[in-house]
Image (cartoon, rainbow over all chains, first blue to last red; front, side, top):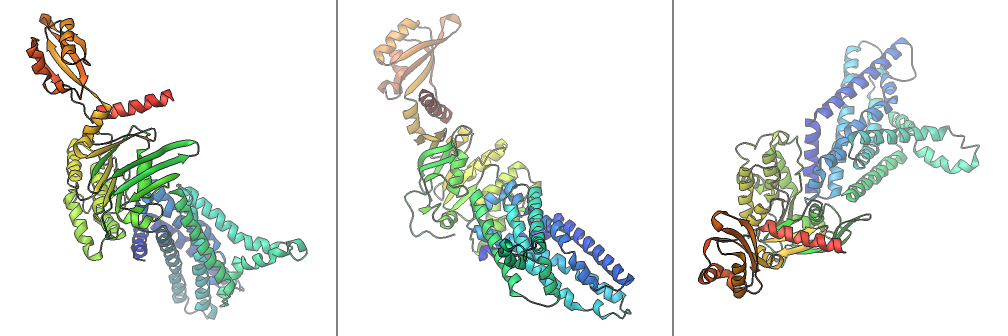
Length: 253
Length: 329
């Protein structure tokens, strides 16, 4: 536990002192600000069935696929390339402590980035305070959607960490993360669109499809519906990925 | 650091260590020991398997078979305990470029179980010992010269006062002044910690080490004190002498003194003088006073000197022997 704390503080320090993180944060906020701006414009032109915040979070897959790989890609691959991971493994710190410290620091960064979106909504509320639109200042959707991001982030960041363990190249780690996250995000929608009802031999897919409906999870969270199934999925997926990451580091050294 | 309950007989034990990469055997049945407080030189030509062995002992690479223990703890079965007694500086000494020297050493001290209240004191002490405190303490590691980076690596190794230190090429890329400093530092560790050090600079190893372990092509070819290896691997003593006595006469006299002596002319000098090379067994009783015997027999000598066999000769003899054996096989 002592090593974990030491490593976590070190990782957080490295992350927040790195230009890479600030560049990524800049990119993230620009992207989110732009999406939010267009969502506001769309809502101002004609009435929409969704709020600007809802509209923005519907595109959560964009930062997920473009930004998250940038946060996790260097965590292990860079250390393996530079040889500092071998040096770290000669200390009594366990591989599990190292993996968990790197995961948690990346997850915290991911959370902090998304929290950076809140000022946009505050600013909009402040500037458009005279507009009589209740849904514009309703924080429920924002809290629900952010909860989804933080919860699903447990799995998504763990996937990024696992991919970073598998290669010495940061670029390759980012690409692997991108492909895996794309597959995971699209899988639920793809499975749902299959005519499972008419193809009886595909009946066994009904259950996994129900579990993997990522966009459905976002809607549920944003609507304030807390279903235990996505929570179990994201927590167990996180444990599985980090367990595999520990084995990957062990196997490579 | 974890305090050992009792001091083991050997600080490092490598027993029949083998590492294979598919069909390639990096090391095979390698066995040696390092006693507590002993400084041992680990030698071998490039690709002999030195770094592989060191990585296995440090627990950063798994061996294919065999047993490795550090201060009585199995590296594979009880890695945390083994690592708590060990400090390892790998070849090329990888360091994080974006940390300052003091920050890095503080982090390493915490990871190496140095008590919180002693961390600052230990960091200051090793920086002082490694001459980092004045010029490198607050600098980014990425901005340091090769010499200072090596010092940071050694300071890291000394941080937790481990029982065993493994240094893979610690003086590579250093200038003579820096080598001298590192050598003195390592020498000062004698009796306090067991040190296993690999180096290509044989003179340096000879100066510092109590014992050497020589490997070639992944196999152990010799181990022991330099003097013992000299006797084992280089059984003959060579004398160079300058005399005006003809070869035939000198040979006759030498053979009377020592029947196993071999003599050859090396160089003809001006004025009838020649440079001769006499080879006699090191164990021969006349070795100690060959000059006196020759003068007594009426040989006129202008110069006589015994060739000194250094570690380089021992190393060459040991590795050549195994290479020839390998070729024969």
